[in-house]
Length: 182
Image (cartoon, rainbow, N blue to C red; front, side, top):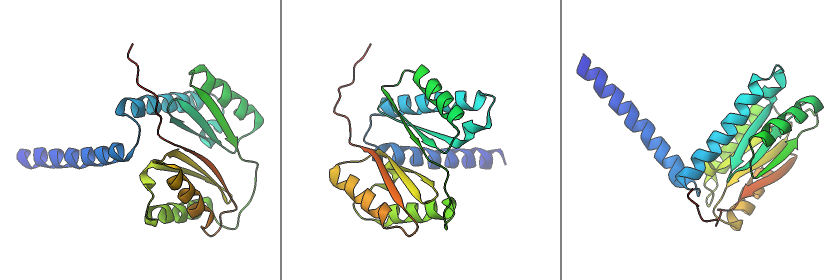
């Protein structure tokens, strides 16, 4: 029984490791850069959630090459707090994208699922590098893509999804900055 448990644990870890390697392999950023970006966005999100306001849940936080993106539908008070918190973490830049309240005929979950499906099925796109936020038909694309052609293809694909009313593009190209060691 103990051998079976160890085998199952090792098999599970191998599977998870394979998923991680695939995700990192498809990402244009260096592993250290990915780690720094994940740490930065997690730190900001964690601090947002520690605040005594429920609006922290309504703000998505992304980071690419130290550039932070705050996306969501939030009150002015939450927006101001989110910006202040993000800036305290000293990112290269902070780009807020606040949605005005709106209604849509298609639910955000259904639209996000349709969008993800189309991104996955579109040849020439590495959909694992593209993050999406959907709010009442409005789509925000974020991530690091290989080149301008892939960026244009992602935007065109998103615009063609039934129910999408607008697409905002924050897709970035791989950074050519050299890594420095301290």
